Length: 92
Image (cartoon, rainbow, N blue to C red; front, side, top):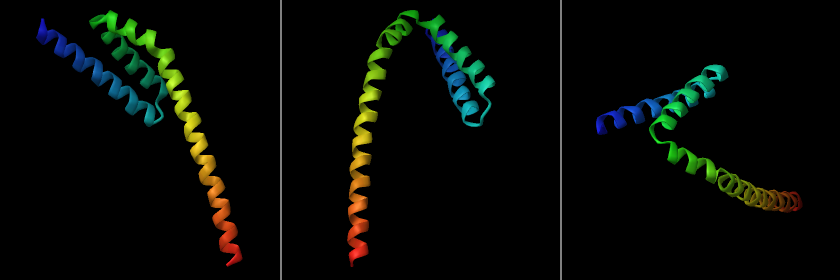
Protein backbone atom coordinates (compact mmCIF):
# COMPACT_ATOMS: atom_id res chain seq x y z
CA UNK A 1 0.00 0.00 0.00
CA UNK A 2 2.88 2.39 0.80
CA UNK A 3 4.38 1.84 -2.66
CA UNK A 4 1.02 2.78 -4.22
CA UNK A 5 0.85 5.98 -2.15
CA UNK A 6 4.31 6.99 -3.33
CA UNK A 7 3.31 6.52 -6.97
CA UNK A 8 0.10 8.49 -6.48
CA UNK A 9 2.02 11.36 -4.94
CA UNK A 10 4.59 11.32 -7.73
CA UNK A 11 1.85 11.39 -10.37
CA UNK A 12 0.02 14.20 -8.60
CA UNK A 13 3.17 16.29 -8.10
CA UNK A 14 4.28 15.72 -11.69
CA UNK A 15 0.90 16.79 -13.00
CA UNK A 16 0.89 19.95 -10.91
CA UNK A 17 4.45 20.86 -11.94
CA UNK A 18 3.62 20.19 -15.59
CA UNK A 19 0.53 22.38 -15.23
CA UNK A 20 2.63 25.21 -13.81
CA UNK A 21 5.19 24.87 -16.61
CA UNK A 22 2.47 24.87 -19.26
CA UNK A 23 0.88 27.94 -17.70
CA UNK A 24 4.20 29.79 -17.76
CA UNK A 25 4.60 28.98 -21.45
CA UNK A 26 1.13 30.32 -22.22
CA UNK A 27 -0.66 27.02 -22.85
CA UNK A 28 -3.57 27.68 -20.51
CA UNK A 29 -5.91 24.91 -21.66
CA UNK A 30 -3.20 22.24 -21.36
CA UNK A 31 -2.15 23.68 -17.98
CA UNK A 32 -5.70 23.46 -16.68
CA UNK A 33 -5.97 19.85 -17.87
CA UNK A 34 -2.68 18.78 -16.28
CA UNK A 35 -3.45 20.58 -13.01
CA UNK A 36 -6.93 19.11 -12.91
CA UNK A 37 -5.49 15.64 -13.33
CA UNK A 38 -3.06 16.25 -10.47
CA UNK A 39 -5.85 17.58 -8.27
CA UNK A 40 -8.02 14.56 -9.05
CA UNK A 41 -5.20 12.19 -8.04
CA UNK A 42 -4.66 14.10 -4.80
CA UNK A 43 -8.38 14.02 -4.09
CA UNK A 44 -8.47 10.28 -4.67
CA UNK A 45 -5.47 9.75 -2.38
CA UNK A 46 -6.54 11.80 0.63
CA UNK A 47 -9.92 13.52 0.48
CA UNK A 48 -9.72 14.61 4.14
CA UNK A 49 -6.55 16.60 3.48
CA UNK A 50 -8.20 18.32 0.53
CA UNK A 51 -11.23 19.17 2.66
CA UNK A 52 -8.93 20.71 5.29
CA UNK A 53 -7.09 22.71 2.64
CA UNK A 54 -10.38 23.95 1.22
CA UNK A 55 -11.50 24.95 4.72
CA UNK A 56 -8.34 27.03 5.14
CA UNK A 57 -8.52 28.83 1.76
CA UNK A 58 -10.25 31.93 3.22
CA UNK A 59 -7.47 32.25 5.82
CA UNK A 60 -4.82 31.98 3.11
CA UNK A 61 -6.59 34.62 1.03
CA UNK A 62 -6.84 36.94 4.03
CA UNK A 63 -3.14 36.49 4.80
CA UNK A 64 -2.28 37.22 1.17
CA UNK A 65 -4.46 40.33 1.22
CA UNK A 66 -2.74 41.60 4.37
CA UNK A 67 0.69 40.91 2.88
CA UNK A 68 -0.18 42.88 -0.26
CA UNK A 69 -1.41 45.77 1.91
CA UNK A 70 1.88 45.85 3.80
CA UNK A 71 3.84 45.63 0.56
CA UNK A 72 1.85 48.54 -0.84
CA UNK A 73 2.76 50.61 2.22
CA UNK A 74 6.45 49.78 1.79
CA UNK A 75 6.35 50.69 -1.89
CA UNK A 76 4.60 53.98 -1.09
CA UNK A 77 7.37 54.77 1.40
CA UNK A 78 10.06 53.95 -1.16
CA UNK A 79 8.34 56.16 -3.74
CA UNK A 80 8.14 59.01 -1.26
CA UNK A 81 11.82 58.66 -0.34
CA UNK A 82 12.74 58.52 -4.04
CA UNK A 83 10.96 61.84 -4.58
CA UNK A 84 12.91 63.40 -1.71
CA UNK A 85 16.20 62.09 -3.09
CA UNK A 86 15.41 63.53 -6.54
CA UNK A 87 14.69 66.91 -4.98
CA UNK A 88 18.00 66.84 -3.10
CA UNK A 89 19.90 65.87 -6.25
CA UNK A 90 18.28 68.71 -8.23
CA UNK A 91 19.31 71.23 -5.57
CA UNK A 92 22.90 70.06 -5.53
